[in-house]
Length: 255
Image (cartoon, rainbow, N blue to C red):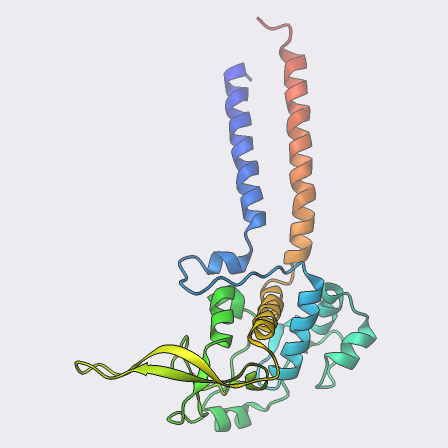
């Protein structure tokens, strides 16, 4: 290998290391949000406290209708730092076994009857739509007597889902632009008409926690992957330094 060829090889290796570092730094949810126009929500799937609070919110307000069929209860134990008993006592409301997936107890026939269709599984929701979309959706429900559920949403218009977190956020009403030029009325802003049990700041934190948990279940191996990835990068850096030293040793007598 000539000196010129070796330098080209080292430049290629450096570029690959940089690409790997960027890939490890970017979560699946961040990639999914490319081009999104929703307010940014600051989440960190390595924040165990946020994961625990988000899991509690999901199990108390969401799992009655929505499943997480690609995630098992035993996976939650490791990510949330809980024992098997703590998971089964506090997060398992269906009597499922520790190694079984998280499935809603609602029969599909009843779900179709009540909502018109089976509520979607949320295992990949953040990975598909992005964390910013999910957080914006959870903040954008408002009262609408024209819909079957009594609620509407500015992010997902005419959503069939009733608002499960209304006791926490409260009841919002929409300020509408009147119809003009044959166009339908549009929502200009949402106002909190009846406060919930949480202040707006506390509700924002609750949404962030729930979104963090859903980001984790969208890619449950991310915690392990990012941990191993740092060791891989460290190994490659050390290997590169070793290759440089070895190259100098081999070429020191070459003129």
